[in-house]
Length: 280
Image (tube, rainbow, N blue to C red; front, side, top):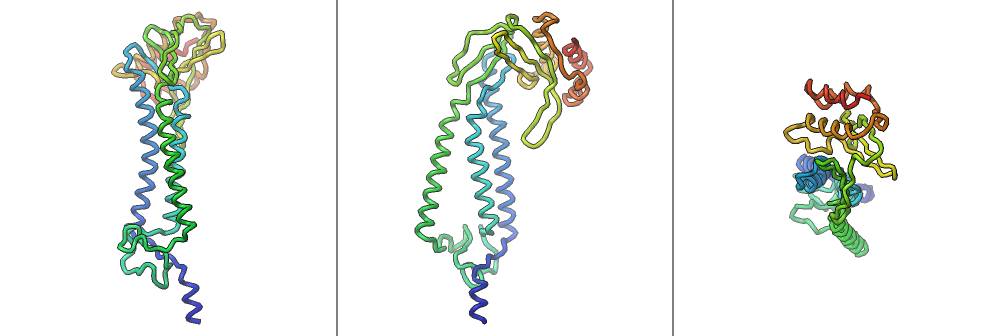
């Protein structure tokens, strides 16, 4: 019976130490922070490139996030899978004091990653080949996705202070300017700001359309708010509105104005400008 009990318990995994648990929690937090920081950095980099031109008052990225998405997914999914396998499998990092890893009654092939016996676990040759191939594939994918990133840096639509729109392609080549005054219709509307998991509130924006079907949308956050903040942004939108006859202007969602005011923290002057913008 003793021999059978020893065989039955030889697969047991020691519980993680408090230090190892804290490290896994920290790694999870760092993974989430990395994803958020990468998104913010990408957005800030786009704005920095666009507003290097002093004539630009608003800029909206093109499909740049589609270029960033593969790297984000690889980082997020790869990191989450690795953490789930290691943490879920109770892989020790420093190990638990008093536990004799690799000896009965614990698993004989489990050792702390940073312990004195690291690398002593017996791994089948097929498993070693699989791990090596997986590392090479992931590294190759990561490098390929990094090389793709420059293609997403420059594509954008820019609204300039002369109220013309210039489109830039992935190679930073500018199209011929399109005057807003030559466009056919304007829509002013509230825009719901959403993140991945939460809704941040309501802001405002406008969509400019041409007869050929092309259109451009600029939100308040696409403008260089600078020292003038929303006051300058609203004035610029009002200047755009003044270029269109009344019959070609459409306003939507006037009932959201109180929520926009609350979310943006408008002053009395900004409230007056916002209501003027939405006035039909």
